Length: 291
Ligand code: G1P
View 1 (cartoon, rainbow, N blue to C red):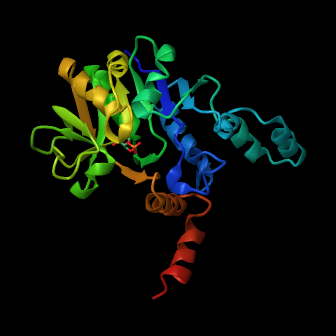
View 2: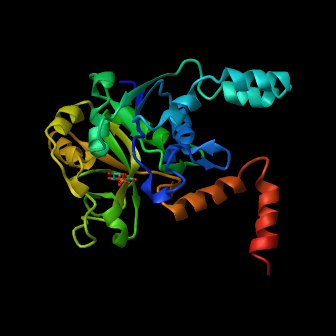
View 3: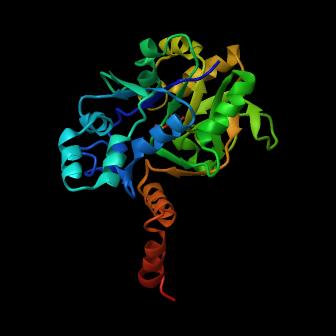
C-alpha cells in the first residue's frame, strides 16, 4: 500500500526557546534560510507524500501563512525583477501536494495531537514527522529509508538512533533483542524512562510510519509520562497485536528542540549551503577558531 499522508504535530509551545517563541512558532525558526517545518515538509514531499496534515493551534498562523500564497510579496518581487526569489516563494509546495490544518484544542501530548488528525487519515498507513528533529540523511532521507522498509513488509516502523543512556529521559526508548541489526522487531517501548529503566540505548527519533490501528489504541490511552497522552504508550499496545519495526537510519539528526542542537544544525547546514559554505568556513576559521 502506498503511503501518501503525513501528520506534522506543530501545536507545541516551544518553551525551550523563549522569548523567541513567545509570538512565533518554534517550527518557523530558520536553519540558515528555511524554517524547520519546511525541512520536514520537503523530506515528506520528496518521499512521495502528497497530503500534509498540520496539527496546530490558534497561535500558529505563521505556519499557515508560510505555505499559503503571498500576493503582495510576489508582486513586489516581479516589480523588482527578482525572479529567482519569486520561484522560491511560489514553489514552497509543489502543486500536486494538498494540505489541511486541524486544531488541537488543548495541549495533551503527541499521542493526542496524532489522534486529532484521525478523521483525515481514515483506514490507511500514514507518517508522522516531528519538525524538531532535523535529519540530514545524505543520499536518502530518513523517511525515504523507512518507506523502503515499509514497502517490503507493510508494517509500522519507527526511526531510532543510539543515545547516551543518561539521555533516555528525553525519549521513547525501545526494547529489542541484543545485536546491532539495522532493522529490528520492537519488543517493547517506554516513554522517557530513567536510565536504569531504559530497556536499551536505542531512542525513537521523530519519524514514524504507523498503521491506522494506532487510532483506536490512542483512544484507549490515558495520561502517561509528563501527564500527556503519549504516542509511545499506544505503540506499546500496537506491537502486541502487529509487528512494529525499528530502523537505525543512516544520517545525522539534529535535535532542534534544544538550543545546542539548533546551533549545531545551523553550523552544519551553513557549512554545506551552496552560497555560504566558503565564506562561512573562512569566517569560522579566521574569527572563531584562530590558531
Ligand atoms: C517525542 C516522543 C518521544 C521521541 C521524541 C523524539 O518526545 O514522545 O518518544 O523519542 O519525540 O524527538 P518530545 O521530544 O516531544 O518530548
